[in-house]
Length: 171
Image (cartoon, rainbow, N blue to C red):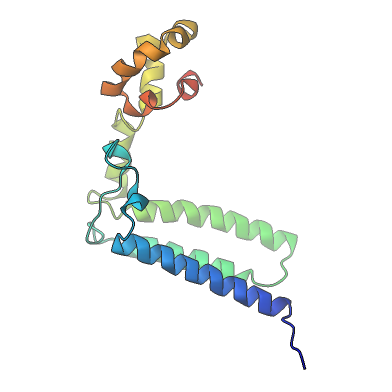
């Protein structure tokens, strides 16, 4: 007698493959087996994640709680779902995703709020906006005409804007 897998079996196999792939990716990140996963090396250093022994702030519970809530939400949606339940789950996933980002940011040495303020004030992180407000971008046509020559100048004060086309600055 030949046994053919049903739709439930295929879903179980897909879930097992996804879990194994996630575990493998996590193992690669934790062991630093592929340092390229932490970003480009050696330049620019701003785009490279530093390898740390562990969370430096010790505030790991917010991120773990949000991650567990997202996994629980996904598990709760295992079967057929009504349109209203799907909308509610989507809204909950968006909120939990935002909170997960804040929870991960809380792992930074200075905590979430201070790190957000520092990144907002950083000329590197906000370099598109910094260049857009600068006198060099006051006239869009002149900025585009001189863009290739301005790249060297932007390299010192607005590194992110200097490595991309001028579209984000003009926007």
